[in-house]
Every structure is written in structure tokens, then in C-alpha cells.
Length: 477
Ligand SMILES: [Zn+2]
Image 1 (cartoon, rainbow, N blue to C red):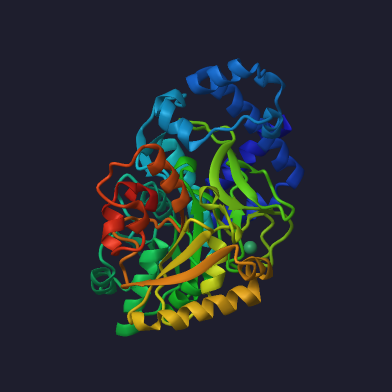
Image 2 (tube, rainbow, N blue to C red; image 1 turned 90 degrees about the vertical axis):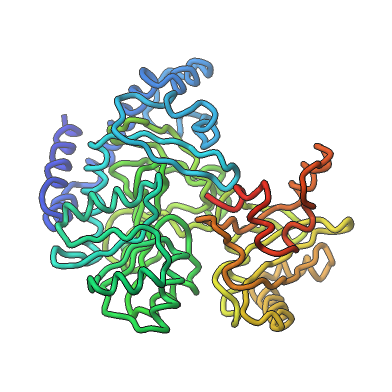
């Protein structure tokens, strides 16, 4: 009874204007929200078990009686993976009629995952987006130009739905060349710009050279950004760059940054979050369960993103807990002579290193005696590669004592390789940060490699060879 009253209050609040919604939602006591989340979880689980062939079979096989489960953590080692979505197909997860579908490709496979949704879900997510954009300061008289990639990607649809509710002026440019965007968008005098982080960096380079106009903020989604790259974008525009965190599978935002920009405030109304295999600091793989009415409910979906949950009040004053900054993809964690390393380690090694571009990629290989870690960076003048390498090694000594000691013990080599600006990413939307070449070498040895290129030369050769190689899917999402 209490739960249904809270649900009515929540839905009524979300259907008012964003300004009232923020105030009304803040009035619902935390224990009542928690009770509602539990009730929604039980409902989602029951529907999934009854109508999705994937969940019905999986629960039956494991002898799970969903009537006795009141929290995802009671499901033991049961999880849903991206591979399940690929191999069983979207239809095995669908529990209602779908109105639309979007796709996403992973860093480990070029095969897309398909995910179905309803118009009802688009509206719900639009409402939450409108609420968040209102909190960030977007108002009806603002002017938005968006450069999200519209091909099979969910973000432009969620944004459009949110902007329709806010009622602000909106032009959709699509993901076009940043220089062309700059010239054409300027005519509309946008006060907010939306796009992907790496594209934002290119746009900021152009704005720094040709002149910026007043912006309220920039908002990026779809991949991570280093703090140095964020700073560069903010300096160019004199405006904050906020990040949104979501996956196509989650349909829009799992969380979004506030003005403090220290983690993403969680969308606890629509998702239940857990962290799998957390280390001593609480970092592990983010796992989420959908709570809203969904065409494809997901129970304990493994995001592959490495992060932690942060509870307690944020300096911005918003009560909702946060998902911490994403440290990288779980499938990019590499155990090697250097230690257990992931993208955040190399981002930290490259922080404040001058004369390099914002894109980089690390290859870990084995030279017959020990692991060789090669840090591929982009620079205009490749004669600076030695100075860059010595700067990176100084950062290694100053910032990662354990990794430095392992190098002193000659457990691995760390070198820097230089490439032309813009060559590492190729045509992929996302750049895989850490590639374990040793796995590719093993695979090649087992399959008596007949591919038309040499794995070991792949990352040391020209960048376009890498993108044209069969593993090109590894570089993209
Ligand atoms: Zn905050």
C-alpha cells in the first residue's frame, strides 16, 4: 500500500515540470523510496521469469524460485552478460511488444547487441533527462545543437525526448566533422552542445583556434574522457563539460554528473546497482538490474565497467548516491609484469605530459623473456618521443611505486611509440585503450595463423594497418 502510494507520488512528480519534479521527489522519504525499489525489483523479476525464455530457462536450470528472491544479491552467481544478449538474441529477453530497437557493439566483438524498447520507455527516460538537464541549468530559452551519432544509437533519441519536455530550441546535426559543425552550428548561437567526448575534444581545438561563443555547458556521453582532455575542452569554451553515463542496454542514463563532476549521480528510480568482485577499495564490475516497465528487463546485467558505488551526500547537495568515475572496462584489465593494470594507470602516466594528443593506446606483448608494455601516443613532431618516454617514466616513479619497483626488477619494459595525430582511432567510435597482444599471439599460435598480417607487427606498423586488420572490432564499441 505504502509502496503504491509512493509510486503514484513519484509518477505524479515526474509528470509536473522539471522544477517541481525536483522538489517533489526530494520530499519522498528515503526508506519509502527503498521500499518502492524492492517492490519494483520483485515485479521485474517475476515478469522476466514468466515471459522471457532466457530468464525462464536460466532460473529453471538453476532451481531459482523467484518468489523467494527480494534482492538481486540473493541470486548467487547468476548474472546476465553482453554475450548472453548476443548468443541468445534479443527475442529471448523480450517480454512485451517493442516499438523500436537500438544496437551497440562491444570492444571484444564486432557483432552488435540488439536491444528493444517501447515509446513508453522513451518518454520515461526523456522525463528524467529533462529533470537532470534542468538541474544543470538548461531552460526553455536555451538553444541546443547536438552532434550525437544517430546511427542505431540510443542517445540522440533520449536527448530529443528530454528536450521536447523542456521545450527548448533544438537542432540535430548528427555526428559530422567538427570543423563543419563549428561553422554551421554557430549560426544558431547554441548555448549548449551535446556530443561524444573525443569529438568534443576536436571541436574544442577548433573553438580555441577560431574563437568560442558563450555556452552554458557542454554535455558528452558514449565514452570516458581523461580529466586533462576535459580541462582542455572547458578552457577552450570557458564552460563546464559534463558527462553522462549510460549504455544502450540500459536505455539512456544510468547516472549523470552534477556541477561537482566527481562521479555520476545514480538513477536509483529505474535501476538497482551492485558491484561484482569488489576489491578492498570497493572497485569492481558495475552490475545493474532494471526496475522500470521494460520491453527487455535485465536482471543483474554485467556492464563490464570498472568502478565503485559512492553513498552519502555529494558536495552539490543532491541526496542520490553516485557511481564513481569509470576506471576502465573490465575486459581491458591486464595482468602482466608491470602488475594489474588498466586504462586509468596509463591515463595517470600521461597526465601533464606535453606535446601529445588526447588519444592513446597501450599494447602488452611478450618479447620471449618478459612482458613489453608499449604506450602508443600521437604527436605532431615525432622527434619528441624520447623526451615523452622519460617524462612517462618519471611519472611512473613518482605515482606508482609498485609498478616502478617491478620495472627496476626488470619484470617488464615500458616504452613509448609515436604516431601521427588522429591515426590511432581510425574510423571507430570508441578506442580500446589496452590491448593484450599476448592473447592474440596465443590465439595465432593455436590456430596456426593464416591471416594476411603479422600480429606482432600490427601495433608497431602504420596506424591504418591496425584499423584494417580483422581485430578492428577490438578497437571499437
Ligand atoms: Zn553531486
